[in-house]
Amino acid sequence: MSRKSLKSDPSDIRAVNIRTAFRLVTDAETISRAELGRRMGLSRMAISDLTGEMIDNRLLREVGLDHRSGRGKRSVMLAVDADGWCVASVDLTQRFVLRAVLTDLLGRILERVEISYESSGRLRIEDVDAVCAKVLGLTNRPVLGLGVAVPGVVNAEGVVVRSVNLGWAGVALKARLEGKLHLPVLVCNDVNMGLLGECAFGDGSADSLFVHIGQGVGAAVCVDGKIVDGSGYSAGEIGHVVVAPDGPQCVCGKRGCLEMMVSVPKLRERIEAEPQARETILANAGTMLGGALAMSVSLLDLADVSVAGPADIVGTAFLEAMREELKGKTFVDYHGQPSVRRCQQGDDLVLRGQAEAVIRRLVDSIHTRHESVQSGLEGAGSGEKAVRETNKADVMQNIAQSNGAQPVKKRGETI
Image 1 (cartoon, rainbow, N blue to C red):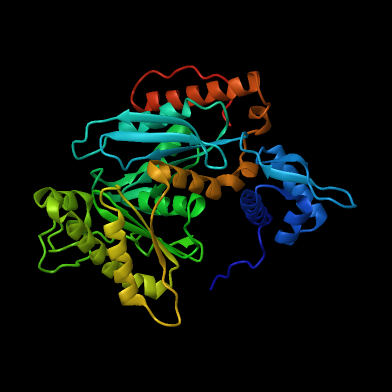
Image 2 (cartoon, helix red, strand yellow):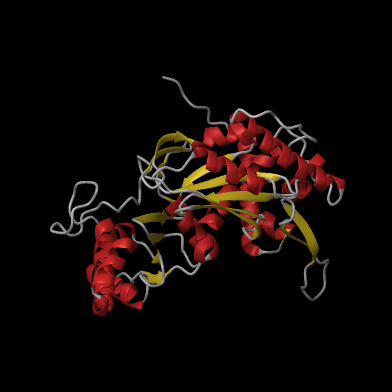
């Protein structure tokens, strides 16, 4: 029987330390090396070496001395270097439009791109190529990575196992885009990215449930700070759970699926048919969703539930009914009730969550990349121009070659 070595790989330890340091600095906004070392359990020499590398690679920067009063030498404070790198994120969840953004390392949106397409039941992969090329061509910074949020089941290798909305099955999107763009790529489920966005930029806790109500109904769960994928990467695919056995027949063949009872199109149809019963229809839908989630909330001891959806659906009547149903089915005297609220992060929630996923997953990769980081980080002027031209030339050449066109001339070296 073979045994795994118990020795730690130094490169693995270094990667963990970079991720940990970056997260601590992000959460603190500013922090001294001494305090960062204490929180990480590293010696003064080790934390100095680690932060020195992160500063050289434009992940962190020095922002002056602390403001404490009294005697003693004041400490130099560190913060995230938001201007050093950027992240590209693409959202494939909207009908008729592909959306993409560039963010900095704090998840703030710098540039925005939208490309319209005809929705004929299947999204053309070439349209995804086009929106990636367009957004990457805008940057004057080195790119940490590209993230793509997909409505459907996505496995660990970045293969879209199944997406009904896009008309895709077995699409190796990560491998395709990495081969074209020569950038690290993450392909993720869109609702998971909504949850991550809510946790990173909103009020989501380490033990929370996120529900998105749109064309269908999807959910994502975070337990102890980690998003649950499930054994088949389909955790949270609750749209075809039966909640009304005598309800209307669903496209899946069953009757009364959650998607048939609570999705935006179905609720709007009922409201249009009976406008005077609007609040009752929405309250019934909230009650139905609350009942469907009660077991999961209790089983996992979740602290909060956030619901994203259009304001005409996810409003007071819906949320109050959902809250009351959860309380009635989960209340015990030794356990507090989870908060239930409307998600407040807006239309960019998935894009910002996807950017956060790229940052968390890839921020440690910079020190292992074979290309010279410093050549692309010379600051303003010719250094930034070279990076910008390189991004445009590399992306456009790869897209052109894959579609049978003549390659364009490359300028500079890619990072």
